[in-house]
Image: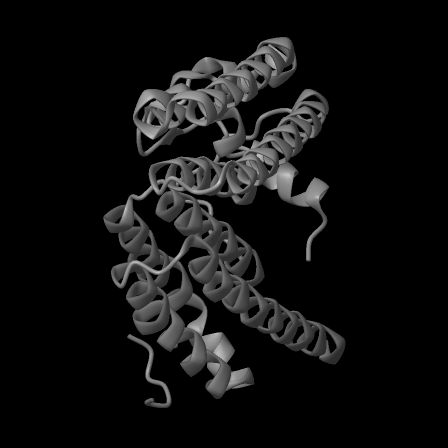
Length: 268
C-alpha cells in the first residue's frame, strides 16, 4: 500500500455515453438480456412496460383505498418491477434513476403497509410515476447514443488514467446507492470495498501529492462513513447524501489531477 499521511458534473449525455459502452455485461441478479444491446428496437416495449407498471401501481393504491392494506398486496410492486425488461434497461444505462425507482417503489409499499393516509400514498405514487417517465426518457437518450456509437469491447489489460479511474469510482458509488435501494446491503458494502481496493487506492499516491487531507477524508468515507450508514440501516436519502458528498470530493480530486497533468505538460 502506498505510504501516506495517517489519519476517508459531467452532463447526462456524457454519463449515458460512458454507461452505454458498459451495457453488454451482467448485473448482480443475472444476465441483463440481449435487448440492452439494441435499445432502440425495444423502446416501444419499454414504453408499454412503464405504462403497465404505472397502471398496476394505481390499481394497488386503489385497492388500498377501498379494501385496506392486506387486500392491496403492495409487495406486488417489486414483483412487477423485477418482471419487466425495462428494469435492466435503466440499470445498465443510468444508475441514479434506477436507484430512485427502487426508492419510489419502497416508499409506496411502506406507506401502504404503515396504513398512511391515502393522500400521502397518492403523493408517493405520483413521485414514482414521475421517476418512471424520467427513466424512460433516459433510456431513449441512451438508445440514440448507442445507435450512433459502436460498442467498444473493453480489454482487461486496458489501464485507465487516474482521472478516468475517478469517473469509474463515481459510477460505482451510484451503483452502491442503487443496490442499497434494492435492500441489498451486503452487496452495497462489497461494492464499496472493492471500489476502494481495486480503484481508489491506485490513484491515492498521485492525489496525496496534491492534497493529503482530501485523500484522508475520502478514505474515511470509503472505510467508515458510507459502510456505517449502510450497516446502520440509514434511509436511502441519507446514503445518497453521503455518496453525493463523496462525488464532490472526487470532482475536486479530478480537478487537482488534471491541473497537475497540465502543469507537467507545460514544462515539456
